[in-house]
Length: 632
Image 1 (cartoon, rainbow, N blue to C red):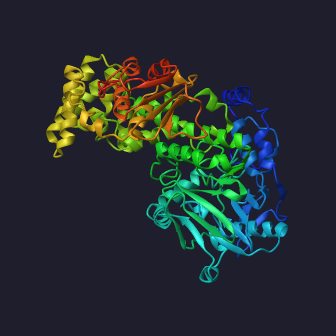
Image 2: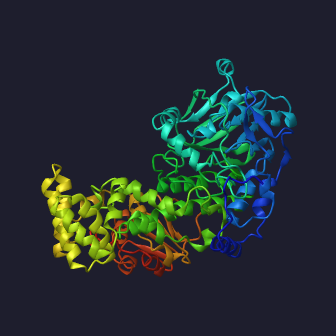
Image 3: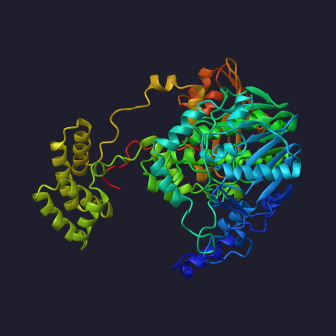
């Protein structure tokens, strides 16, 4: 095995922790191993994919070491995932559908038509895409490419297009399909901040690390990125709406647009005649990124979960297999539904619980430390954080809603890290020493430094009256010097509360007019983020609302996630059915009337266990409008 230069063995504590992982999770479950190898037809004879100059851009054999037992220097769960991702070759998904896997970070899917083959997501590099197409043709014949589809706007799903298609092919009428907005986002992401993203991607994918037990073992979503020629052929067919149907080379496809999920422009594809569903990168065998570590716009987990629910409703009744542009397929209608439902609950839970704790005053790092996943989800291998993580995804959700600023005025105008570090060295010596030197800095007019450093004392000992007083004095001086009105207000409010205690929230933002303007979907979503997840892990409650002036809606509490939607095959038998008006529904959900009052109200009919509604609402917590800001 290759080892990075100067690498060291695992510390005993790390080795013990890795061994504990084996005891914690079900490593005897071989279903993923069977699914990842199902339909294998063969792989390339030459393991090296080279560019025109002979430079290796991909090595199929680089991860052979993963076939050995996991060493102490790797987490066994990641080792397992990487071994599954490293399997390479051509695989049959179902009749007429094939995938090239392990030839790049992503998969290339090939669907056979009447005259040729339709290519979905042609990898990152022209060289790896061409090698994958050649492998397919070696098994299925020299079929021409009769169409190409990009599922979304990330480079690993379009960059290799020139390895399977030419401009002349397009001019001759070969279509290139993509979701609405694809071109704008594909270009902007890779140009506007492309240099910084690429530099960080070198860290993200371990570009300088040799593959091996002490080096790079994979990236969770795939092994790593190929280093060949990236290209782009603009789409010729725009997919603009869910339900849009296109037929290419006799292949009928029904599309679901999913903007704002894993990519700003993305779609899922249903093949009705093949009973197959392609989920692009919206449902893969890991927890995905809500904010990729290379940098990107924060993705919306609420929308992500919504589109997964929609996919379940639209397609799972006529799908025997689900596959994606990463990892391996899932077969069987029941397994497909469970897989997509657990993926949905994964993103919904992270969203709702982050918002719940955010509204109790916790910051991103605090939420990340407190977040626990429901046991039922944690037991599913495909929910593990191999690519994204619970920790940085929760911080991303916080960032999406509240941004970088946590509301503490001490963090509004901090010194940059290097300057602060120099001062920290000078200030070492404990609270008394910090305060002694902070008073000197205050006398020197270095109020920013006083705020930054004394804040640590206040948070370590909020009852330290001397620290609170000095912090308030420094905040006040910063307020006095601020040209910006809101900065001034923040600084001075901080000083006020340090001296006088919290004043709470004087203005009620959830005014009646605003609540009345919520759509029912928004209202249901507002309830979902109030669910106390850990206390609701084992709850299973379904309530159906039959509206006399609208479509029926079903709420279901499962895995600590409160979902809602119109009646579908995915909905469980309700515990209770209420027949009522929308006005009555809003009244009980907003707490204007109690569940008992609703059940006895004129015009309301109840079928089933009326107590189920009280049980469901009992799992909702209340946000804290008085949480501390300048103290812990």
